[in-house]
Amino acid sequence: MQMRKVYNWQLGRNASYVYPQNRPKKQWAMVFDLNKCIACQTCSLACKTTWTSGRGQEYMYWNNVETKPYGGYPTAWDMGILSKLGMQDWDGNKYAGRTLFEAAEKDEKILQHIAAEEDWAHPNIGEDEITGMVGKGDYITMPHKIWMFYLPRTCAHCTYPACLSACPRKAIYKRPEDGIVLVDQSRCRGYRECVRACPYKKPMFNAETRISEKCIGCYPKIEQGLMTQCITNCIGRIRLGGFVNTPDKAVKENPIDYLVHIRKLALPLYPQFGTEPNLFYIPPIHVPTTYLKQMFGPQAENAVKTYLEIRNDMTLKGLLVLFGSMERIISSFRVDGKTAAGFDEKGNEIVKVPVTEPTFIREFYDAKLQAYRHNTP
Ligand code: SF4
Ligand code: SF4
Ligand code: SF4
Image (cartoon, rainbow, N blue to C red; front, side):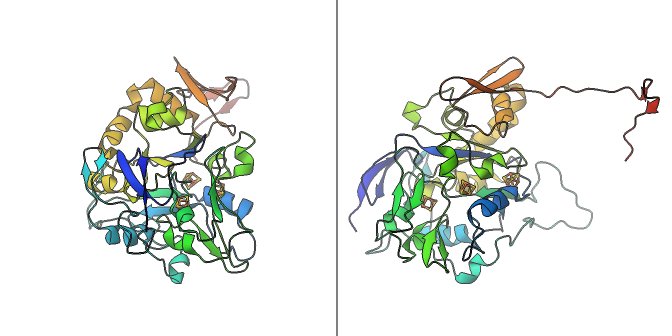
C-alpha cells in the first residue's frame, strides 16, 4: 500500500497516512476534565435521545462512558489494538514507535483489531471495577494504588481519520469548515471497512439500514455556534468544546489552544495510533504514571503536576470554571481578578462567572420568620 508522509504534531514527527495532508480551515475539538466525570451517563443519553433512537440503532452509543482500566465499549477495544501494535516508545516528546498506519499488514491500510459481535453487546461492562483488591482492614487514601476512573468517548474527528482512509466507496469525508468527519449515507454500502479500521471503534453498523453510522459532531448545532448535545448536557461540567489550532498557530486567548498547547494540560487519547485525534483529556491525578503515559503520551506526568497546582493558578482555575457555563461556543476567554469571561467569535462577551463561588452563611435563627435553620437532614 503506497503511503504519504504527513505531519502529526502529537507525535512530533512526520508519519504515514493514505492521503496527502489536507487540514481543514478550522478543527472542532473537545476537552474533558477526567477528574470531574461521575459516569452519570447523561452525555450518552443526551446523544442517544437526539440521534440514535431509531430502528437498528438500539445498541449504538456514539457517546459512551467507560470505567478504566477494565471497561470498554466495545469490550477491550483498546487492549486489543495495543497488544497488536506492540512496543510504543517515545524519545522525549517524539514518538519512536510505529503508528497503526506504519504497522499495517501487507495490502492493508492500517493495523486493525476487529471487535466481535458480542463485544458490542455490553456497553457498560466493567463499570466501577477497580484494579487491585481492597483487603480486610484496608482503606483508600488519595492518591491511592487501588484505582479506576471514568473515560467519556465520542468520535475524535481525527485529522488523519482511519475510517476515511479505509472506505473503498469514498463515502467518508472531513468537512473543511470545521473538520467534522461524516459518513455520506447515500454513498455508504455497508462494507464495514470503517468499523474495522477505526482504532477508537466509533463507526457502528446499522443492521436495519445495512449502512454504517457514527457521531456527527452535532454539526447542526456547531453551524449555529452552539456546543454539542453531549457537552451542554454534561452534569459534571467536565467538557468544553471549541476549535483547536496546530501548535505553531496556537492562540493563547483560545480556551482549547490554551489547555492543549500553551499549558499542555489536556492531552490526546492514544496519540501513538497516528490519527491525530481531536479529543483532549485532562488526566486523572490518582492513576499510576505508566498507565497515563501509555494512554495520553509522554506529557501525562507534567499535566498531573500542573493540575495539582491549579489552586494557585487563577487563569487555569478561571478557565475550568467556564467549562459547562454556556451553550454557545467560547472563542476566547479572559480571567481577571475574581471573574472569568468568555467571548464569541466577534469578541462579544457571552458569559461571565465568578472564579470562586461566593459563600453565604445564614443566621441560625431567622428573626423575621421566627424559624431555626439547621443542617440536620
Ligand atoms: S475516531 Fe474513528 S470514526 Fe472518528 S474520525 Fe477518527 S478514525 Fe474516524
Ligand atoms: S457530538 Fe453530538 S453526535 Fe457526537 S457523541 Fe456528542 S452528542 Fe452524539
Ligand atoms: S454527563 Fe459529564 S459527568 Fe456525566 S458521564 Fe458524561 S461526561 Fe461524565
